[in-house]
Structure formats: C-alpha cells, structure tokens
Amino acid sequence: MKKTLDAILKYIKETDMFLLSLCVFSSVYGIILIDSATRHMEKSNNVYIQAVSLFIGVGLFVLFSLLDIDTIADRSKILYALSIVFISTLFIWGVEGNTGNKAWLRFGAVGIQPAEIVKIPYIIILAKMISDMKDRRILNAPLSLLKIIAAFAGLFGFIMASSQDLGSALVYLFILAVMLFVGGVDAKWLLLGALLLVGALILAWNGFLSPQQKERILAPYDPSIDPTGLNVRFQVIRSRYAIAAGDFLGLGLYNGSMTQSGAVPKQHTDFIFSVAGEELGFVGCLAIVALLLTIIIRTFVVGIRSNNNIGMLVCTGVAAMLICQTFENIGMCLGLTPVIGLTLPFFSSGGSSIVTLYAAMGIVAGIKMRPKPGRFRSYDR
Picture 1 (cartoon, helix red, strand yellow):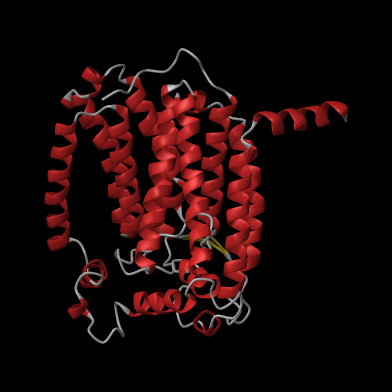
Picture 2 (cartoon, helix red, strand yellow):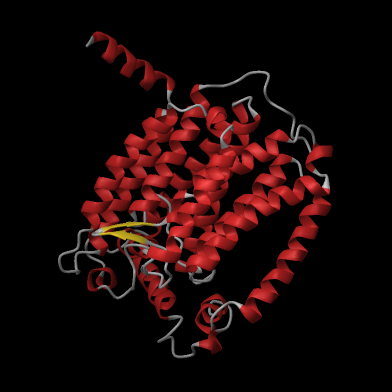
C-alpha cells in the first residue's frame, strides 16, 4: 500500500498537474455549458456522455503520460498502417453524424470518429519523419519533402474519400504546415506548397466539392448566397444574435432565451461558444479564450524545454491542432470563418474529441516528465 501511495505521489510531483488542471477545468466548464444547451432537448444524454468521456480522458492522460514518445515514434510505420486501416473502416461501416458526412463508426449509443483519433499518430509520424532528417540540408531536399507530403496525402486522401470530412482534413493540413515551419523547412518550399495548395483547391472546387459544401465555405463572405438568412447562414446568424444578446456579463446561466429554446442549431457541439456568449457574456467568452490560450502556450513551453527533437515537434503538432480548431470554431460562431463542423477543444460535446485531446495532453505531460538532454537539434531559421 505504501509503495502504491509513494508511486502516486511521485507521479503527481513529476507530471504536469498544471496542464491537467487547465484541461479538467475547461472540460467541467464545457459540461456546464452543454447542460444549459441541452435542457430543451428531451432525453438528452450529452452531459452524461461528456462526463464519462472526461473520466476516460483523465485515465488516458495518465496512461499516455507514462509512455516514452521516442519508443512510440520508433514504430511510426506501424502507426501509419494502422491509421490507414482505421480510417478505411468508414468505407464499410461509416455512418452520418451531425455534419452529414459519413465520418463516424457507431456502436449502439457510442460513436467514434476515426479522423479525430488518428490525429495523435499522425502528429507522432510527422515528428519522427522530420526528426530523422538530421539537419536542414537533408530536410529541405526535394525527396525528403516528398516523403513527408506523401505521408500527409495518404491520410488526407483517405479521410476525404471515405467521409468527405473537410474540417478534419484541413486540421491535418494546418498541423503539417506548422510542423514543417518549426522543423526548419525553407520559406521557398513553404511558398511553393502554398501555391500548389491553391491549385489543388481549385481542382477540388470544380470537381469534388458539392454545391452545399461550396455554399458553406462562401456564405460568411457573400451574403447574396443566402440573403434571407434562412438556409446556409441560418446557424451563423442565430449564433451572432445569441452572442450579441449576452453583452458584457450575459443573461445568466440557464437564462438565455435563444439557448434555452434551442434557437441555435448544434449549440451543444459546433456552436457551444454562442451559449457562453449569451448566458455568460463577454466575460464568459474571454474565459474560454484565456483557458485555451494558456493550454496552447503551456504545450509550446513543454516542447521548447524538452531538449528533444521529437518531443518538441510533437508538442508543436498538438498546439497547432488546438490553434486551428479554436480559431475556426470561434470564427464560425462569429460569422468570420466557414461552418465546417470543427468542435471547440475541451468545450464542445463529443466523446471522440475529449478522449483524443486528453491522450494528446498526456503525451505532452510525458514529454515534460522525461526530458532528454543532448538530443535537441537547433531549429534556428
């Protein structure tokens, strides 16, 4: 018993309890908002699912913090193969979720989103590939960059082909760009990549995206697409009304007229920020931004202090994932970015998102627990 207690105390002392506390506080805040957002719904179990997911997530945080990231990264080829197989299951068993895309595997009341979970091995795979290229000259060789791009393109292609989950696919792209930049890729290659991306988007726009997807992307910037606000822009307009109604201090928890009537569609998932805006006002929204910003900064700090190439790159990838989803989600709630179905990290309802986030944060905590002096390569640009 004493040995067990000593082990627990040692773990608490060595792990990143500050990071875990930030994540748990954010999740509890999110559960309160989800509870308010779903009170008008009959027989809603979202709060229960979110609470159970939080409990599982904390367990995964502990588990993943005990794993050596370098050991896991050494099996990156196996991780890649398993990721492809996992995403490919959507071709056979994929079902539509709230986004209308077949991005989910359903087991009774439990839904799993493969593209969400695969973000973790994807980040580790990229970190391993970039770290193995010992200096910038090797990293910037065309063949080296083609290998990295091919790894991304494989997962990106399978996600789009199996589920057309554009939101998740764009998060993968953003993670790639940030990790390559931090890894030391020359600006000329990043610029060339941006130009190729524009060309690929033009091809996708003309030959792949559905009319509905095109409208959702353009709607925030072209009101003529939905002048009445009753179709594509309906969610965004309602969300903005709810946030504006909250003013500085909000109308009070469980007292928002739009929130309690369910006037904002998907307000417990994609538009949870509007709930905070109406019921807790600017202060409540600012608290969300402050919590997520602190988690992101903490993740970067752990990576910088890790003295380890892979550790630093993994932390960079995790932070990039959080930045992309936070910016896009809050932006779409304010009508500044397209509505593409990305959840707000730690706050939106979604079991797959919660367990993935806590597993990722556990990896970050593990990197803090096991610094590896002498294994850090300079990434000066």
